View 1 (cartoon, rainbow, N blue to C red):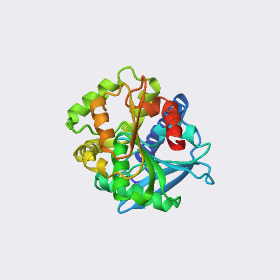
View 2 (spheres, one colour; view 1 turned 45 degrees about the vertical axis):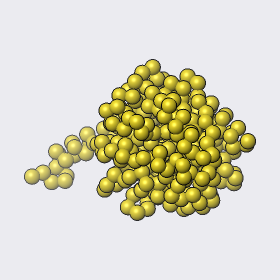
View 3 (cartoon, rainbow, N blue to C red; view 1 turned 30 degrees about the vertical axis):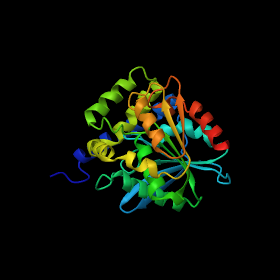
View 4 (tube, rainbow, N blue to C red; view 1 turned 120 degrees about the vertical axis):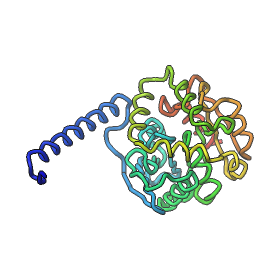
Length: 284
């Protein structure tokens, strides 16, 4: 049996280094092509109740507004790069990797949406900024909704972009088919960033999809007690207009906004239209 310093072990170590360097090079290339900043912000690892998230903080800590951004299934904090760059001039902006996504370690068990909400709420309190503006995209809207209902002291307002899951079509094959249709004709930026993040999410996507699909956000929407902005891309196949209208109608203090010509990944393609509406909503 070879020892640690054997030629076989040395060759294995060299191969591992080559793969790691190649992966890093591909990551840098994707970041450059898609406009993700080459320098990381202030990075923090936070653990609560057996699960860990990674938070990347940018912007002015002296600002009065704080945004916390929660990604969708298969994604990670880097998909918010464009949104962060539009917001961090006059706010503190924190984008997170949920457990098992992006750079965050995989938990022993896939957390339910409610447990993810408890983790995010614990992090918001740890952040020490008081109630924040909590924004979620896709599956992230389910987490944000549960934070607003389970931990109302943690949020000032919430933003739900492309809220899932359409309660009339919870089947995983239906959701995958809709996502595939939605990606037809999408930009290279969306395909590159989304594809990389899905690969990072690893082999547990099936259990993560199950956790997303069994959650019933429609039960929580009527109990949201803070102002809520609900956003949909006009061409979003994953979030059809009837379901979007149902979500808006169920939330007591909801404002709706539709981004013309955009699909499900509207914030990745370009966050500018949503940010413009977000500022009007906040200032109004």
